[in-house]
Amino acid sequence: MLLLVIAVLQAQGQAAFWIPLIKVMFTLSYVLSGPWVGAWSDSRPKHSVMMGANGLKILACLALLAGVDPIAAFALTGLGAAVYAPAKYGLVTELVPADKLVHANAWIEVTAVCAALFGVMLGGALVSGIWLNSQLCIFLTDWLPLNQLYAVSMSAVGMLYLLAALLNLYIPDSGKRYAATAWNIASVWQHFCQDQRRLWRDPLGGISLSVTSLFWGVGASMQLLVLAWAQAMLDLNLTQAAYLQAGTAIGVMAGAVLAARCVSLVNAPKVLSAGIGLGLALPLMTLVHTWPWALALTLALGMLGGFFVVPMNAMLQARGVKLLSAGRSISVQNTCENSSVLLLLSAYSLLVFLHVPVQGLIWALAALITTGMCAMTWRYRQISSGAVITG
Image (cartoon, rainbow, N blue to C red):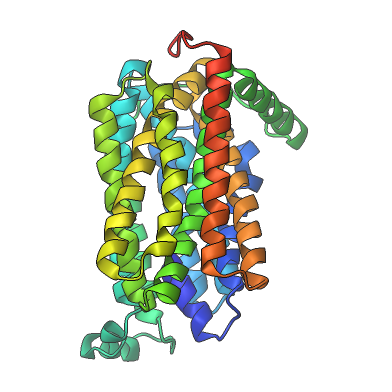
């Protein structure tokens, strides 16, 4: 969906700084809905919540087909994702014991990355000239009542969201039920603020929340930076750059599998050094000018990211479900992580608007993640090296 919206904006001749704002609006949906989606996820069977969330994404595709502003349509996709996440990850914490959460998160990450990899490849294909000029696409465009360049591509994405909604019918109900929630604004906001304070004040919860928030904020910026890097320094087009992004996704998947094999929940904080390594490796992007080396580098960066974020997610979920509840803890996590995404994407958009070169953007992100991960490593050593994560 992201590549399709980017292609629509480029076809409209919009300025380059509008592209990061796509992700900003997507993320804003997460942040603004944060106080409600966790409680909503806990108020009913989670598979039905996920089905409704996919319905919102289908509406986003229909809005794009109807000519609604692409950024507004993508914001609706963000709302669907915000509703979906607490139900999906909350269901995992309801079904899986704490000592299996690293393994569960690793396989969720693998399946999510496989889906993202497929999405990147499909998105690159759906905006490519080969597809748009094919006889099949021309035939389907003439058959559709809408005369838009990407009408067939938008319809294909909408059909995939419909399939995802139908698959939720086969997801089992955990049987877990929570106390009824008061839905007035004051009560929801008060409980959400209490949840935030409780998770942030927990030593291990605060560290893992800081790390995952930093990771996803940098990761969202990196998603756009890789596209810009590939086009500016490797002379690749948008479709080829999208395929290069797949290298990062494969690396994340490999890192997640490695984490599942090598890291237990109790030892999760020890992977913080991999985050420092990720920050130190980022500037290597400025030295790469050929696609084979670029592919190797994106694979390595993705592997480092997957190896340290999966145990951090598991540690955060273990603390969250013990201190709060499945849906509420994921809602807090999503709000914090997407607030970080919103902040860093806004900064990235500003830097692009100010015509900061790609090399400068790379160095800025490298300094941020290295400094942040060093600070979290120091913080963990200060609190207690013998802290009990599952207790």
